[in-house]
Length: 472
Image (tube, rainbow, N blue to C red; front, side, top):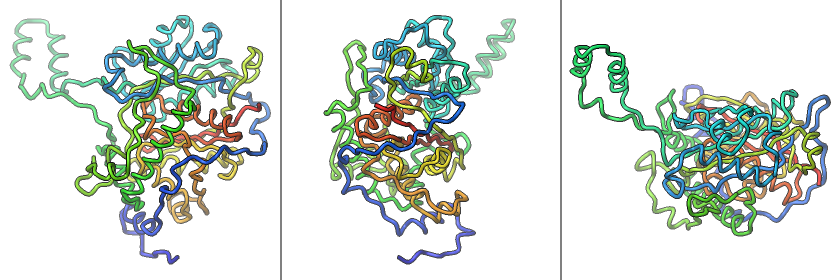
């Protein structure tokens, strides 16, 4: 195959990528079904001398629901409390042994800014148990988990509950800044004259609200717009994106029907919700009828090949291995090496997995061939497929990552076999825990040893982690 050799130096980044990747189509239409269970030989363990082993005992999540459905009248701490209660029921861990609770969230409810603390109190944890909330966009729960890993590995704690929550059904909508300033000044006014003077400055346009948007502060570009540009830069077609989205929904439906999504716990609100409601396998013909959602009329990102606004919460019980065994638990997995990365938030906003994957593999002394289960966050089909093309490109590795060779393409037969964020849903602050539990549960089911979790996030950031199955 002849490689294009145009002078790239003066071209915009996206144009350079488009020239390079337009000749490399990627299709998953022939791999819409999960491969049979993989039985792998036991490889070396990633235990390190003089560092405590950190294990996942178990993890749960509420059903992930389309925003505006059954959770619409709740508050975030209600969902987080439900995840914590479900974890307590699933593991029977005594509340008093939990040393610390950490939750991730993105769109904060101002009344419960430390949602981890409010949810913990609501779930019956002691008021002596510290809790804090972290925010790192779509990898907020990842940050909650790895913060817990650090606390345990350093000997500060033995038992951590980490999780995340998002309620997109009700997000804060602010008054305009001019209106906020006027109201604050009125509150400070000490005389009627001062109040009347301030009121005289009021204008009706002050009442225009500030609506929230999933956009980058530094670029003012929505994530969907970025995804559309990324797909174009890597020459990912609309058909390829729709095919991948159909794969995600089809595998999620299969996993749901077969009872493989065992991390889901019922939630009474007031009717009992038992399963995710965004899994909707369609047809390529129906998907093709949808209009572009962001770049009109020629964009390729649509509602069908994007993750949807989702409500949900997750929680995991993380322990030092010796503590878990002393309490009689059989852990599901070890949490091993992890890596955070950060890139240009304009042209490389969603390429976190491409940058984080080779770094975490090198840190762990593994290669792509050692990984038995891949669990990547699916923000958009175009984002996943663009990452695939970048990961499979020596040119991209050399020119943008400072690497001599590519990391390689994740085999689709090992990739997101039980569906992903496109179909299961993506509550921003909760997805990280879902990814890790999916990897851990798949390793147990499929007989693998190593899982690789990766995700992109707003701000051009990303995360990757190695999950190692606990010996049976």
